[in-house]
Amino acid sequence: MSQANVEIVRRYFDAIIRMVDTHAENPCSFVGALEAEDRDADARRVLDQLHPEVRWRNLLGVVFEGKLDCARAVDELMGASRYYSVTLDDLVVLGDDRILAIQEVGMRGQNGAVAAALSVFSVMTLREGLIMQVEEFLNRVEALEAVGLGG
Image (tube, rainbow, N blue to C red; front, side):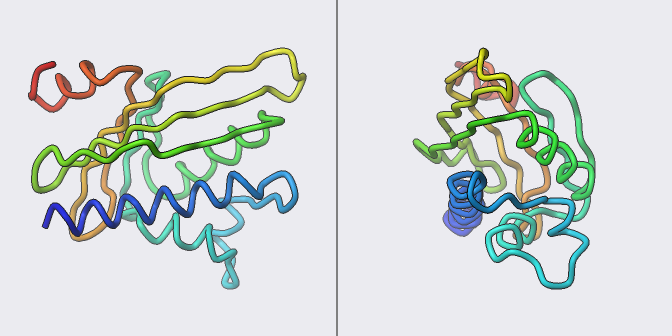
């Protein structure tokens, strides 16, 4: 099951990366994609990998619950960004139902004055072939400790 989960998470990030890379030329609302019958293909690939009751805790500790809440949060993030990038560096199996996704994220705010680049360590928990929970951390040690695996 762990290899199947790796592929689910890889497809999820592939679709996110494609959407982020084309967002400036082709802005897409995740909320719009969730509510529309005729969705953008990459938005559909992202949303289809998520469990309806998905729970996402971002780096700031803010928790979003359900696809719609998560979609709103992504729309706000993209709306606040002039530039945003995601690169998937690695996927590490942490057990049958958990994957550690290591990403590089870059962002520049709309005013252009604030820029950031950082590594994000996301513990992804899967259930029934869908991403049920995402917890983001700033370093590998915190991510592993959160799932009881130590540093």
